Structure formats: C-alpha cells, structure tokens
Image 1: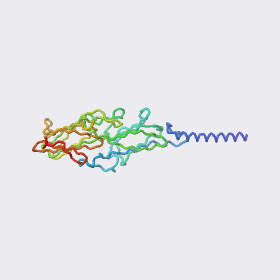
Image 2: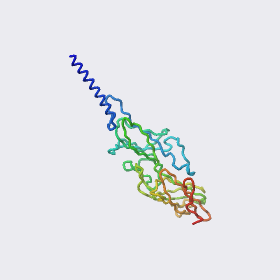
Image 3: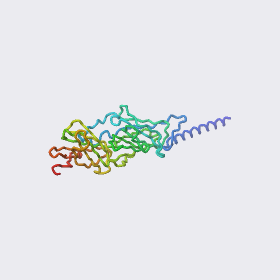
Image 4: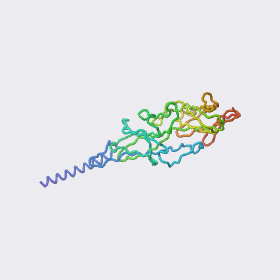
Length: 311
C-alpha cells in the first residue's frame, strides 16, 4: 500500500512538472494564436498610442504667409477626428473597426485599447485622421477620396502599420502623417473693384491609398470673395501633383461678384504640389501695365517667374 501511495505521489508530481513546462514553452512561442486562459490571468490587451508626426508643414518656418502651430498642443488641435480599423494580416478580414469620431480629450496622444479577447497574431492597423465623416472612404476604408467632385481637400492624416501581437509585444506607438499639401497665393496691389476670384489647378491626384499611393489625376477648382482688401491671400489644400512641374495654376479675378467676364487673368503658372509642404506664389499687380509680376517662394527667397519688364 505504501509503495502504491509513493508511486501515485511521484506520478502526480511528474504530471504537474510536465504541465508547467508545456505552459512555459507555449507562452514563449510568438505564433500561438491565443493565450491559455485556464486558471491563468488574462492576456495583456493590445494597446496603440497614436501621435501626430506632421504637426506643421515641414517648410512652415520659411513661409511668412503661414503661421506655425505650437508643437505642444493637445492631439485634437492638430487632428480633430479619427477612424481606425484592425485587420487580420493573413486574411484581410476586419477584426475591429471604429468609424469617424471626434477626439475630445486634451492629451498629446490618443490611446486605443483593443479587447482582451483578441487572439495573439499578426494584424494590420489603418488610421485616418481629420475626416468629416466616413463618406470619403472607399475600398473597405483603404482608400480616401481627397478631392470629391474636384473640390478642395481637407487636412487628412494617415498611418498604416503591421503589428505582431504576442506576450512580448502588446504596446505600440504610431504617428500620423499628413497626406495633403497647401497652395498659398498672395495678391498685392489689387484694384479695389476686384472682389472675387476663381482658380483651377490641374494634374492633382484625387485619391490616396492606405499605403500612401496617390491615384487618379484631376483638376481641382475653388472660388473666393472678399469685401475690400488691396492685398489678399488665397489658400487651397491639395493632394500632390502627378510629377515635377505638372500642375498648372489658372487664376481669374472679377470686379464685384460678376463672374461673367474676368477683369484680370494673370499668366498661368507651373507648380509642383508635395505632401506636407507649402507651395507659395505672389502676384504683384502693376496698375500701369494692367498685369502682374509673378513670384514663387523657393526655400526662403521669392524668385521672379514672370517679369512684365521682359515680357
């Protein structure tokens, strides 16, 4: 009887040791699809801290027409809304999705914690920032229409990353990057009768994918009016151009709000719009010649590209 008890005790001890070893081995494997939760604490949930990389345009310090923002503001001061989705890397299936929502806290980053029930594995995170709603998202939210109906865009931000979620990797930091640029047009010495402008910029990409790939060239159009101002600044948020010096800026200026016949039409200008960059033009009206000297800002120097004295 004593030998039977000893053998039983030895067997139980050996079984316990083997169980512990198996648990240790399993927990060390990154390819395990889920935690072993029997009689164990819950797995650490996957947490993502989202920050903003492009708080200002990279060349804002060289452009007097644009005032830079402080780099220490709350997250929502740069990106007021967010959308995110988490996909299974192997199948592309959306595991969790949050449609466009307002960011209301005053923290410098925005944190997302996924359900503890999420299995260990490899996932793809896509985050869009700055959208008004979900209507601009297509292709299962992997593509964003920046210029719907050829209109001006918004300050849109994006981050797309592949994450490995296991016991050693439960907390990630990702940073949003701006996908658009901005065109600034300063017009100086305008006649007081001129109160309205329309402009078009062609060869601008209409859409951007989750991989920062720009597609579908179009022409973007915008109108502006003002009461009285001899010097005005017009701005347009645009996707990048299709190539070097591919976009043509065409500007019409009208007396009052009469849009029938332009009072002034400066020469067209070739530009290159780039992501997260300010492109600046200056039109200086010469009353005697009834035309414009036109400049482009290159680094921090205004370079003359259309000279009335020569032409």
